[in-house]
Length: 486
Image 1 (tube, one colour):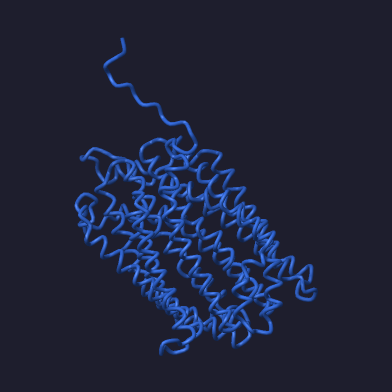
Image 2 (cartoon, helix red, strand yellow):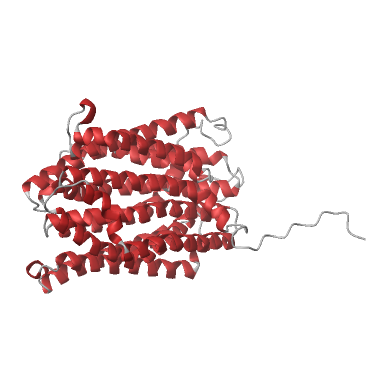
């Protein structure tokens, strides 16, 4: 006779349907990938319009944009680390702590706004250090100065979006950020070329539309959170300052954000070194990065998804599922970037059709041929780029941010030192090999990052890490909480 008691359902075993398998990862990742695809399109269109405007504008946007990234990446890294707190609180079932963590991230973001504004008068001095041609230097300065007006919005919205991404509600973030991106794209042509009665602003117009869309994104998130019917459940109505929570956000968020600052700074030095080899080298590198964004930027969405799933599963004390989510993400990431690796290597000219069709710049044929070569470098390193994106997401989701900081610091400094040493010893400036020499350095740097993060993940130390405080009895004193964390 069969039992009248229901039998437990067997866990699905297929790669697709099992917990933290392909379906679950994609449910969280796809909206973020769509969102970052829109970012890629925005960046591509921005560089496309600037290439139609002038090659000087295209070349100037790269160092100006990179220095802006260096400015925001540390505070943005701290604010976006709220995602890990939200994910682990959510996995542990401590919903009332989620809003408190988000509020502290938002307050931190607003505190950075005046600091970004202080960078505006310093811009001429900073770009003067790179000794670029006067006209390019002028364009770099104004591009950076306008972007700085919207830098604080990027930090604030990073904390705001964590309220949704940490809980796996990534569609909300997709709709908000896509709306902001569409606003940017719809304004760019008018602001850059002066259409429909707008002034012809060139690089200033490209930066100004970014600033407008950044603050519009903050406004949209604020309205959604204000209208949420779960404000009390998630502690969004709380205005209590929790110094211990802020301490932990900085303790884990600083080592998470500093690698972005260090890598961004190293990348800026690398691009500045390349731009010093001339307008063609700078414009080709700018175009190659913009085209590569189609493959790279969507991977950021996968990074956030893996970080979220690892945080949630560690909050549930199920590290085996966190590991499974990471390997699933790696398979998806390698499959996606593999398509572009083949295209970049076999038919790189496909990605330059629009640039070729709508420009009459006499230097563009040289830029085009150089960009085709650079895209083959991208094809060589993009698999390792996918590896580092996925494994860094997993390590950050666990709280293993100190290793991420150490690894990024050592390898970035080693890459830049190696590049300048080879440039001096092999006389790159005299031989004309500098552009490709620096691209070989960058390729080796990315390969090393991917391999070392894989090795750290395989060690498994991250499985015992947590960023949230242990759930102690109400009588526990603050010193006891602090001792438990340490």
